[in-house]
Length: 42
Image 1 (cartoon, rainbow, N blue to C red):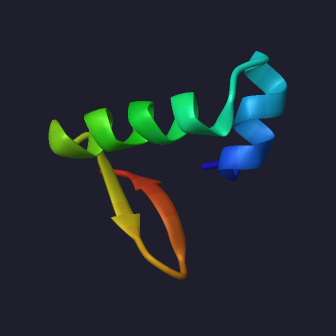
Image 2: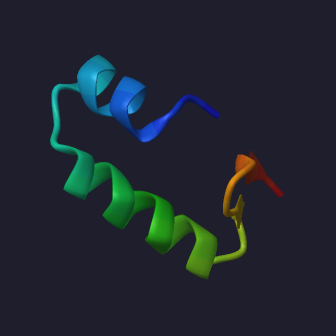
Image 3: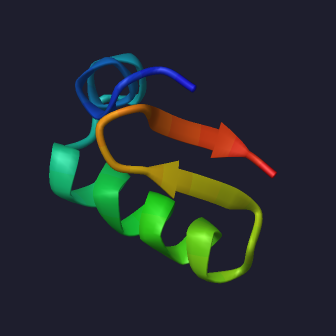
């Protein structure tokens, strides 16, 4: 997936909003967040 900054810029939202969305999707096991490597679709 793109970086938080890239998604925030692309969708015109703040990085906080992107982080919240990623956290929500990871909580639903739709994304896998690997610190230092990236975020991946499960």
